[in-house]
Length: 72
Image (cartoon, rainbow, N blue to C red; front, side, top):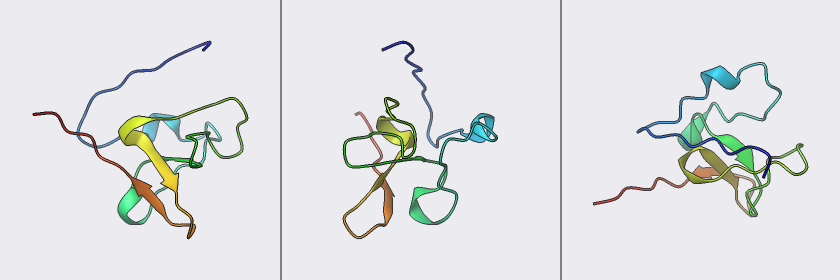
């Protein structure tokens, strides 16, 4: 990896990515996520991956889902 950005929080803060060209999901259950395929590759950006709570994963039916991770 050339760069890794680690983030913490309850809801993805993606406002700073506005204008970056990254595909951002703004509607529905996946609000605020970066759109990725099932292998977490950012759609339209070869070699760029997004994982964790900010990844809006494209499902087989084309819907986007963010999978929240919580520790106890």
